[in-house]
Image (cartoon, rainbow, N blue to C red; front, top):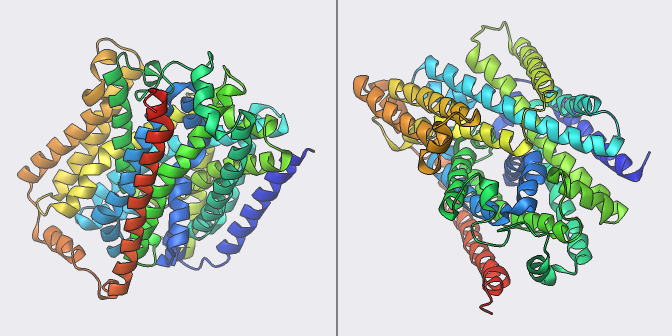
Length: 537
């Protein structure tokens, strides 16, 4: 048994112990679903970033960087980070005020309509089952590297790990283990990255080495990235692809059940604002650092056949054993944290929102929620054996489902009093189907659709346009009732407990931090990349 395996197994044991310990404090549905609505800033920020980054952030996205699209990802992440500011301001704080236990329940309560609650629950399960599939695949690949066992066995082991500490503890365990895991992969990447930079000549020589390396992928350092890597044919098409995916992730982190849903666990609304600011900084700064680590490997091991393993290769071959172990533990943590989040949300949605069963008591409902988690975890495990696509493609597909179908009903329900139950429900269904059908046509390569649905006619935008159109039609045909309008007005009232001037003063400190980090990051990219690359300094 090697040191890498021992280290990763030790981390897994720690997560399981914490999950079991948290599970012992679960007494009712409020504890299990929303962690008693008492989570502080550090826990909400930790679970937000951990569930967003996922194994895709360490494997799928890094493969994209390694193959020539680091600039594409930097642009995408910059747009995505804005969602952590937009979401709390225009949706998250109102979601918390509703005191609902799941996001589909919020939609049902906001629009006084059980039908939209069921529709939201169904889209949640479909999206997160796909995302869970990506997590199982990623953690399975890592376990295969560590254990040298057959892939099928590693997939089962990966499934067993995250099911173990999610099954028992619910949200209380998930936010604790998420925060632990986010700390592990943050520090692991920072420490491990130093060794990778030094191995290729130091961070100061990275740009020069890549410019002089004949194995550097085409377009890697250009503002548009590798055009072929985005599936486009032109520079404009490449940039628009990054912008499109950035908008998708902007909406996803702002309104999705595994991101915005964390706001329901926050201790106060101010915790929501501050956590969003921290997550935004991590999305820009930490991911830029992680991306630079990945492209550094081009100077050490160019032309990897499976670029999804770029950081795993660096952990084994570049870093000292202790740092490599720490890095591998971080990658494992990223996958497990997201998987636990997705699995818990799936279980909550089915038992609370899709299948309306009257349980004799809360204990029985908890038992059924756990059983549902087990069943859908097994479904995702079976799908992972089919090796359907790359981790990045599956993850981005899952996020787009929510972005296309939920954006209008979620934000529209706050900013407009005219959006009715029928309009919101039609909007959600139209966004979902409007994305799925064009995406299938493009995926199957059926002409002329594979060349028609691009840029601002991307399947995501088709879904978004239809979602907005049917929101207007539905609200026109069936106007909002007094009950719906009254509930929205109730959400607009700031609770007395949230009006402390000292809290708002502290919030503004986080806002200033965002400004400073934004300026510093821009100056770094300008003077350490753009200007030297174009021989302007």
